[in-house]
Length: 158
Image (tube, rainbow, N blue to C red):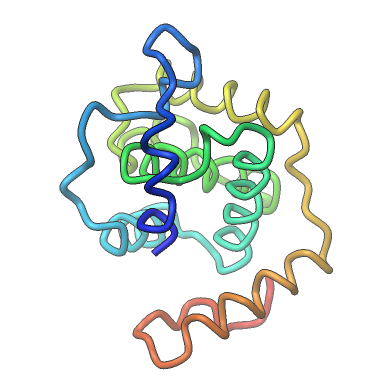
């Protein structure tokens, strides 16, 4: 839904020589967003808290650089990177970059590390999210998902 609202972001794509262009595809990926999120949740064993923190990180990226507002061209790569960073900041144990690369459809460990570095730079290394912010995002997600098939946000924070 946010991608559809960010049509203007698609008109403001970075030049291919810019570092952040690593987040952008030449064309919009064929895999629907819901299927991609399901894939990340299933194979990266994402908790609701990891997903919530990932959304906070995505919002912070967009605030830091408007070209990083999610769009059809960058959503998958931004999402897998945000989930990986959220997992690393929230969970005691997490998968290696290579695992996230395979699950996220990223070309390899070096590319995943580049995406991680670029997102950390955009975030100015601010990956910690306080409990209050998590609660606000969780409430918004629950309000949005009422009546939908997504129920993984309804459990208590981990």
